[in-house]
Image (cartoon, rainbow, N blue to C red; front, side, top):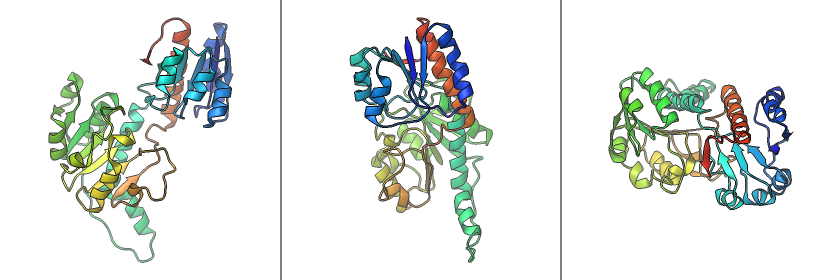
Length: 318
C-alpha cells in the first residue's frame, strides 16, 4: 500500500522516519510532505493514489478525498475529526481513525492557566506594570474552595477535574452518562442548568456535533453567576460566542478564557470576543505542547500500522 503523510506533525523528521520504519518493514511505501498546505487542489494532488493518508488538524475536504481513488483509511493525528469531510469519506468507503488521548494533559493544563489568568489578572498585570502611569495592583481570588463545573467528563474533562481537585476545588459535572471514575474523584453529577447556576468556574469539554452545537446558548449562559468565569478549550461552536461577549460586556459573567472560536484564527477584527471585557483569548493552542505532538504522532502511526496488520483501532467512522 501507499501511505502518505500530507503535512508535518510538529516533531523532528528523525522521529517521523523512526515511526515510519514499521510501515516500510512491512513492504509498504511511505511518502512524507514536509510543508503544510490548506489548498484543496494541492491536497487532492498529494492524496492521489494513496491507500492511507495521514493528516493533523488542517481541513481535509471532499475534493481531496474524491481524488484518492484507492483511499481506505484517513489516520488523523488529532482528537476531533470534524475538519474531515466525513460524508465524502463514507462515500469513498474510507475509515477514519483519530488520536484520542494525546492532548489530555496539555488541554487540562491550559484550562488551569486560563483560570489562573482570570483569577489573578496575570495578563492585565503584565500590561499594567509596563505603564509609566502604573494604575495599581488588582486583588484576585483563589481556586481553593470554589465550585468547578465540568461539562463533559471524558478523558480531558476528568484530567481537568483532577487538576482542579489538586487546587482544593469542589467538583460538579454534567455528562450524558455518569462515570464511576469521576465519582471517585469526588465529582457530583448534576443537570446542566444546576451546574451553570452553582459553579464559580465552568470548564467545557464536549465534542462538537449536532447535539452540542450552541448547547451553551444565551439562555443557558444567563444562568451563570455574575461572579463566575467560563473556560472553553473544547470547540468554539459549542458556545454562542456572540452572546458570551454580550454578557461579559454587561458584567453578567465575570470573565472567560477562550481557546477555540467559531472559526480558526486569525479572527476577523470585528469578532465580538476580541472586544469583550475580561476575556483572555489564546489561538487554539490547548493541544499544542512538545509532549503532545510526540504523543499524537506515535498514535497516528500506530493506528496506521494496526490497519495495515488487519487490526484497525481508534476508528471513529467506519
